[in-house]
Image (cartoon, rainbow, N blue to C red; front, side):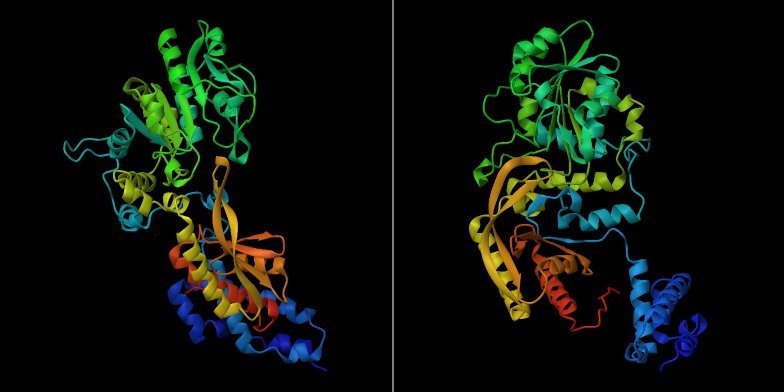
Amino acid sequence: MVDKKSILSSIPSVDELIRVKELERLIALYSRTAVVEGIREYLGEYRKHVISLEKDEELNAINDSDIIKGIIEKIHNMMRSNLINVVNATGVVIHTNLGRSPLSSRLKDTLWNIASRYSNLEMDLESGERGSRYSHVEELICKLTGAEAAMVVNNNAAAVMLVLSTMAKGREVVVSRGQLVEIGGSFRVPDVMKQSGAALVEVGTTNKTHLADYENAVNENTAVLMKVHTSNYRILGFTSQVESEELAALGRKMGLPVIEDLGSGLLMDLTEYGLPYEPTVQQAVRAGMDVVTFSGDKMLGGPQAGIITGRKEYIDKMRKNPLTRAIRIDKLTLAALEGTLRLYTDKELALAEVPVLRMLTYNGEELGKRARRLGMRLKKSIGAMAAIGIEDEFSEVGGGSMPLHKMPTKVVAVKPKAVSLVGLEEKLRAYKVPVISRIVRDRLLLDVRTIMDDEFKVVESAMQWAFAELSGSISGEREVQT
């Protein structure tokens, strides 16, 4: 019988292990403090594991080589960033849980240069005096949207709150009852409005609101009329809503400013690519809206931001609002937003280089080629362990945009022959570059619409590793990146 005490006493000490060549290399990669901490934590876990073993053959299998491997994996996992890249194989293009819109690869060098050095964030280089951080994107936003002025805050909810705090604090905002939506994370438009200090006045009914409803609600305490684009849901059937042009005209008649929260931030009409009509920012500005707000990380395909466009007199007041400092954006967001907006100065360039636009406008032929490419890779690597096929399915826009629209797509369907389907999905999420997929009936689906070109190899490697783990052909050692 193997003596556990003798095994425990034979486990190398921290001082011995720190001198092992493989671990010395980790000290150079990370730090001595991190490596020592990793060794201590692993040895504590290892001792508990030894104590829990009951069979002699299990105890006899213990060796120093396994300890070294375990420590290396432990330290890599400890030092790995909590925020990591994942492969989005779900087919949801603007996936809120996965960071919404991926940025264009063209921005990599710009973002690193701005992040790693000083910049002219708030300096006017011509005069040498303090400048405005908004000046870096204002002209570009105005050029693209046709607005008089613009500014940017950290998200669209903050943009709406700033607009109402500036234009309607302590007074009333008239808005259609059917437009009081709830956005992601249980945040509701009425709650955002309440935080601004404005009083909400609901008009109309859930399914029908008429121009007269707005007009009848106006009194001496009314500050603004407001329209909220319900991008994340639709009411069908017996419905009616007031168009932007009508509401803007009423505002001029009543001497009241009119604001519109577009949310999704579309700058390009995509109906020619088979997507449903969605109002663009340019259309809202042309309709006569005094202020228009929208998101940067939805249909625009940029970083998280709340963009405010409109008449200069109102934007200037917002810049002076103390709330602006609390919700302003940083240099990285500005750099990413400017880079994204510059792509929009050429339609074809934007369609090719803004990932969200590219994914939304793939045609059937392109999707078919991508699916065949991934399918061939998987058949070669895991074809003996799973049935691999290409099927028709549907993708979603996501991010609360175009909620009823289903985009025809191609998926690679994987049906394991001997391992658990749920286990396969879990293992793919546990890979060093997690692959996020979905299960439909008895197959695991990989939607090629949202998989990047350089991620096909990652998906193949993840599948190979997952099947090996599940089949027990490797010892459970997880791959690590150095």
